[in-house]
Structures are given as C-alpha cells and as structure tokens.
Length: 156
Image 1 (cartoon, rainbow, N blue to C red):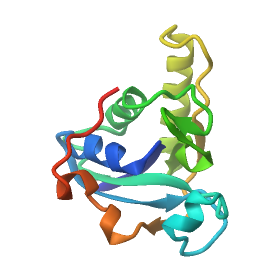
Image 2 (cartoon, helix red, strand yellow):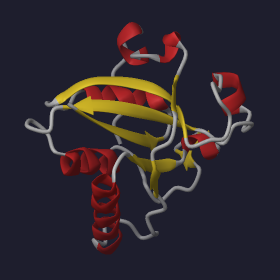
Image 3 (cartoon, helix red, strand yellow):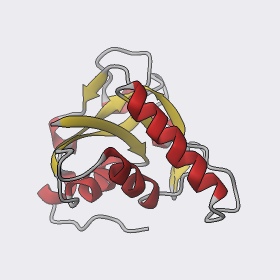
C-alpha cells in the first residue's frame, strides 16, 4: 500500500470522492501544511495554524496509480481558486498536493503543468505542490462524515 495526501476544499466531500475510487483502500481526514502541532478544527478554521483541511489516501498501486489519483484530485475541485472552494473561503480550503516522495512531487508538477496548458481553465492553476509534513488526524466526527450522515458526495 502507498499513501497520498491532497487538499481540495472541505475535506468531507473530498474524502467521499476518493473513497469511491477502485484501488483506494482507506482514507482519513486531517490537517497538514501548517505550523501548529496537534491542531484542532476550531484553530484551523480561525486561521491560527496555517493548516489545510486534507485527505490522506491509502491506495493499492497495482489497482490505481498515483497519476490516476492526481487526475481525480484535479477533476473534483477548481484548482484555479486561491484559498477557497465554492462558498468555503480561507487558506484551510486551499488546493494542494502534499508529496510523500520526489516521485510524487515530479508527477504532481507534471500533472499541474499539463492541466495549466490544456486550456480547460482560463485562469492559472494555483495548486500548491509541497513536500508532505506531519499529518494530524481530524476529530472523529469528521471521519467519513458523509457516510455517517447519509449524504452523497458533492459533484463539481
């Protein structure tokens, strides 16, 4: 199994979308990319930690490739919106790939460049591609939120 970490807005819908992909074995939502250890949801929402709401995806690379995860990631949100997704505004909702290896970083940079030059968007892709740092698991009530509440994943 391998791990990939993505931020694409509110982590509830992002997690639900990744969980639907064949080859994704498990997911968890949490906070990464900030400067505070063990951040709590309220701290993140008040912009006190620098973290993004993120989803850590455990996947079977024999069933789904990292490149396929990147394609799904870029398709599930608007990567041209800086520090927001739809009505959710703030740096915790930024678009980001947290690369766990130089290979993931290279693949993410290549995918971003391809998308930027594809003509799909009129504005430039602002997705951050940064090395993965500590991932802090979000509070339990955030895990698999849509499943717990019988909600369908948001679709772009």
